[in-house]
Length: 152
Image (cartoon, rainbow, N blue to C red; front, side, top):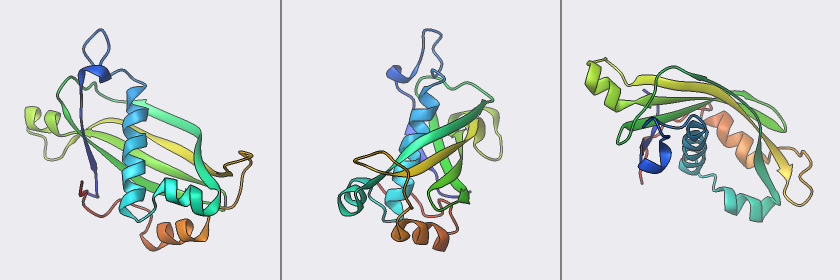
C-alpha cells in the first residue's frame, strides 16, 4: 500500500446516528493532502509567503461505500491523477483499518473515495495562476503519489 495518513474517528466526527457525518470525509481528505504535501517538503504557509499563491479546492466528487464509527482507525491516501499548469486532480481514498480487523479482510476496507481538483491562485486576488515549479517539479519527480511513510 502507498503512504497513508492515519486518522482516528472522534465524537465530533459523528452524527446523531453514531456514524461519521458524510462531510467529514472531506475534512479527513484535506488533512491527508496537507500532510502528504508536507512529507514532500511542500509547506503551504511557507509556500504562500514565498510565492504569494495558494491552493484552493475548486471541485470535488465523492462516493461513499461503507460507514465509519466512533474510535475507528482510518487511513487516507492520495494520488495525483492529472497535473496541469494551474490545477491538479487528486484521487483520494478513506480506508478502515478497524473494519479490516473486524472482517479479516486482507487490506484496509474502502469507505469513501473520490477526486478533488485543487487550483493554484494568487492569494491576494484569488485569480488562477501557474503552479510554482518547485511544486509541480516535486510532484512530477515523486510520481504524484504518497509513497513515503507518515512520520508525525
